[in-house]
Amino acid sequence: MSKPPLRDLLPLTQLFRLERIDDQTFRSTASPFSPGSARRAYGGHVYAQAAWAAAQTVKDGFTIHNVSGFFTLPGLADVPFVYHVKVIRNGGSYCTRNVSVVQSEGKGIAFTATVSFKLTERSTVEIWEGCDLYKLYAAALDGRGPEALPDAPGIDTPQYRATLNQEGRRVDEFPGLRCKEADMREWNKGRPPLEKRQLYFYTPIGEMPLVSECPNMHAIAHLYASDRNSLYLIPNILGRGGDYTQMASISINVVFNGTVEDMDVARNGQGPKWFCQEAQVTWIGGGRGLHQSRIWSPEGRLLATSWQEGLVRFGRRDECRSVDGKVSRL
Image (cartoon, rainbow, N blue to C red; front, side, top):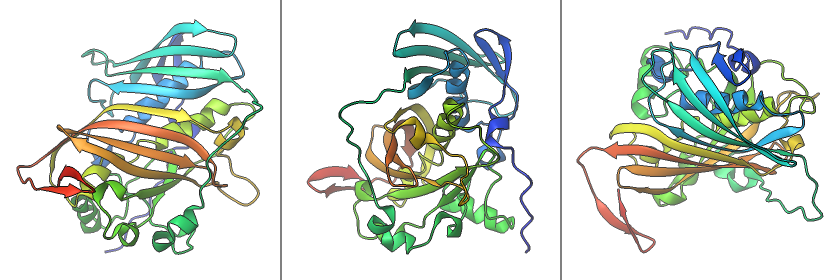
């Protein structure tokens, strides 16, 4: 069966465009991505757009450096989000905002976030971590750049991949970003669950403003990417990709470690810039799991670190064994 071409996808800047209701209230104007074309909205959309709404209330020069968000109700893809921004503090170097998000159907707050901004600051001490992804993950990447990797599906489970293949589609139509994923099976082979990794590469769709003029839109691109297929890694590393019975994000936190210049996602003379999310799971238990990731710049500098707590419940099948001296349920 021939695969239908993907339609033109909404550029990142249009996807996050806001309608200003008053000085501290904003409404979304574009529908978010809905994994599997269900009615539920992709959580990374409301997470990133809440930070973007907060950014409309700070002075020039203040850039997002930390966003902590909590999901309290499922987001609906066909109902606009309304963002209420509250000023917590305007300081000389830092400022803080709280954002409460509701939808017009009105069942209460669906999402809340604390967003911290800071002025650019140069220190006499600058220490940052670097990584040669192509050396570390040679078994998975085999020297191939992101363009040569397959597109990431909207739901990273074996069952959903089979559904896409049956429909003659390779991927979903994900707006705002082009997303690629590495096949990590060879690298992960023989490793215990908590030592397995997944690599996602992303670059924005459409033109971006200069990072010197609008750094927060560049930060939004990374916040939006941070939630991409994140919790699906939990059942996948256990070999139970289709065995979970419930899954939902509880909280997500991203801290930017790099500079404003490191955030720059705009195309350069050599083409698109591809950033990499190196993801892992560090804990599973009690109906929850913890997804962590490091986001690397194309130059191999650590740009951001993320933590996401999720509700993940499995079926009745339980096995117990010791992994590195610790008891793990697999």
